[in-house]
Every structure is written in C-alpha cells, then in structure tokens.
Image 1: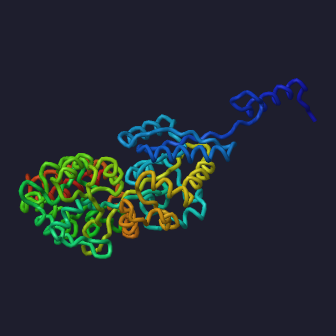
Image 2 (image 1 turned 90 degrees about the vertical axis):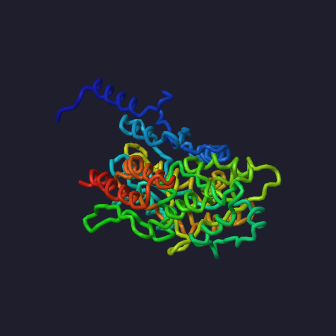
Image 3 (image 1 turned 180 degrees about the vertical axis):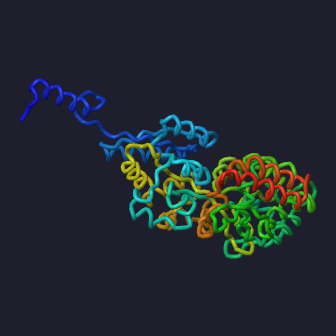
Length: 428
C-alpha cells in the first residue's frame, strides 16, 4: 500500500483549510450574504423594507441580507444586463408582467419546491397564476392594487348623482352618463391619464368580459378584439370625443400630472391606482373632500386584471434555499401588512388581508380591500412578445383611437393583424 509523504498531506490540508476560510481571514466559515434588490421608492416603503432587513439580520447571523436600491424606471434593462453579466442580485423585486421573458429565458429560479407550504397556501391561486409560466412559479406575488376612481366628494354630492359602492358599482354605461352630467362650463366629469394606455385598458376590460389574448390547443396565442374588449375603449373614446366629458389634454398624461387639475376643480374624477391615495393625502389642499369609488363593472362584475409586485430568486444564486427563507420571513402576515401599508397597496396574503388596518374608513382603505377578491391575472401576463406588441403596436394604436385620429375598425385591424405578426415571431 502506497502512502503520500507527510509534507504532501500537510500541503493538501492547508489548501483545504484555506478554501474554507471566510473573507475576514479568521479561519472560520463566513456568513452567507444575500443581495436583495428592492424597488421600494416611497419614503414609508423604503423605511419598512430596510427595517425588515435589519430585523432579519439581527436574528440570522449566518445569513446576512444586503439591501440594494433599484428603480422601477430601469429595472428590466438593468436586470437583463446583470443576468447576462452574472451579477444578478439573489432576491429580485419586480412586477409579474415583467417576469415572462426572464422566466422563459432561464434567468429565474423555479420556486415550486423552494417555498414553504405556509406561504403557498396563504396566497390565493389567482395570485399565483400571475407569476406562473409553463409549469413553474418564478415569483411570489405579494402586493397588488386595483384601479379605482378618485372622486371629488363635494362635486358628486352637489350634482346629486348616485355614489357607487363595491356592492352596487356603476355599470360602464352609467359611468358614461354620470361623467356627462358632471361636465360643462370648462369642467370635465373625468380625466383619463393614459400616457401608457395598454395595461389600464386591458385590465379594466376584464370587467366586461374582454380577454384579447386567446391561447389555442397548440399553446400559441392569438389576438382577437371582440365585443367584450371594446366596451372600455369605446367608453373612453366617446367620453373624450363625443360627450366631451373627458379632458382631451390628460390622455397623454401620467397619473400624477392630473392631480393639480383635480384639486383645482377641473375634473370630478380621475381613474388611478389605489396607491395614489398617498400622494393625494400629501398634496390635497386643506379641506379638499375626496373619496375612493370602485371602477365601473361590466358583464363580469368588478373583475379587473392586476400585475402584482413580486419577489423572485436568480437562477444563478448559490443560496436559493436561504433566499427562499428570507422571502418567507419578509412575507409573514404581519410583515406583509407592514409592506402594504408602506406602499399604500393591498397584500395578496389571505391572512394579511384580514388585518383591521386594511378595513378602516380612514383614507378609504376598506373600499380598496373590498375589491381584492375581484383581482385576476392581467390578460397579457404570460404572453411572450407582449412588451414589443405593447410598445410598437398597442400603445400608438390606443393613443390614436382615444384622441379621435382613428376609428374602432382601424384600432381592431392594428391590434389583430399587426399584433399577431409580432406575437408569431415569439411562437415559432
């Protein structure tokens, strides 16, 4: 039996020890470090996220989390660059409608076998569907917001119109009549901020039975602009071009751009995401009386599409189970409530949604929470090629239709014919 010289064994042992030494050179294995890229941007939200990271680190010395600040404005391109460069954060904050290409491209880890049963059972299946691509789950949906009507309560009361509730909402036709009644003398019943018109149109169209994207038996998706898809676009078009009850100047504006006119009494209502309430609380003049109303209902009631905020894990992360444990901690019911309050949004978790803080009449939290059960996966959630279709086909087509430059027939032709040519390139 041959044996190695003692000196050779010493060298091998030294190399093994060196490989196990932590970065501090102290001779012991250092803690795992996870990079968590957060897109929180509101002061309250950033504070809550940092507090939760601090709380985790205080009780998990062997798994340290490093907070990294990201930005919604550039997240897609930034993530793509970091994925391709092998520098992606371990834990990724994004939105579900941005995940498809990353999931199909192999950049995100399938979370199916990584997440604890507690978390998987707490979040409803309809929410999981927003982050499911193929047979895998590539994100944990945790925050969502319905689109609502922010209304000048004084104006509505003086006009004597019926005020809708989640139990008795306006229909789309009633909404159109109300906005016409509220208009005149340089004032408008509604201001639609449609700088980015596609998601707002498609998500609200679910209430009228609109689906637009149809998946065949072969798995391929085609676009068909049917009657249910036309209800919301026609309402907006007719308000702006026929009834003159919608301000034409806000059609190219973002949501925040409409608030000065809203506060100034130029518009009675503005359709916005539920989280805009924070800006209204901060910016509204003293004594300004506003309230949250549910979006109009159609053949499918109050149903509307959402793209929840998500937490994902990079496929290249060497510490996937540790990252999943941190996500589980971050999304415990009490922590999910803290994140929701910080972002002025709704949690997806069933237990978190029961929290009394989300059912108060203060700032109309209760109205938004009542809509949570009606939120569904956005129509284009898993459609490959959607970003290109949205940018090159749908956005200019909807913008021209809402401005009155083209009619409904041309809108349909562009969405279907031009749109299906785009999608076909992704489904060969």
